[in-house]
Image (cartoon, rainbow, N blue to C red; front, side):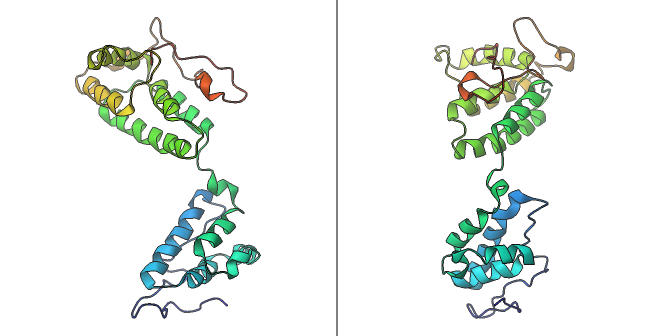
Length: 239
């Protein structure tokens, strides 16, 4: 049976938002599949604050869901259980797109786009860093890439001119850094901030230079990723 009122019996004065209230969790299956896990997180957050039991949280999640989705969830045994996490996991199996936020192709496209335009200031660097971390951290957490891949591909997203300046700067950080081992991203960011703040890069330099490959739109991921259906070529700069 669906709840029809907001107040609950868990904590005196505590309530669950009504369906349609601006604070109520919203399930947008077609428009934003990636938000589906967040829907369940919001139900748990409201339910915990309102003092609901796990079984009551399941009931409220079904109440908030559109009729078609609720009918689908009704089919899983966990919908009649007492474990909200188990119910959440069972329901999420119907939405594979919700469980796959980013792919290696997304990371490759991000790197290609970034490498094609030289960064002229720290604001541009910050934007690239945030976008890269969002995508690569997800892939790292789901074991699609390694930390080695993440570090290497971060530099792949820098324009060859900027990578040349960075190579020079990093020699002064640690001259005996092992060949073939990518630098930590934090160290790379620090040196890039110094380079960009010092005005060492200008818009007039935005062109390919000898000894460096312009990666956009012909950038391919490193060979160790074995990206399917792509002819791989390694970056021209030192890691």
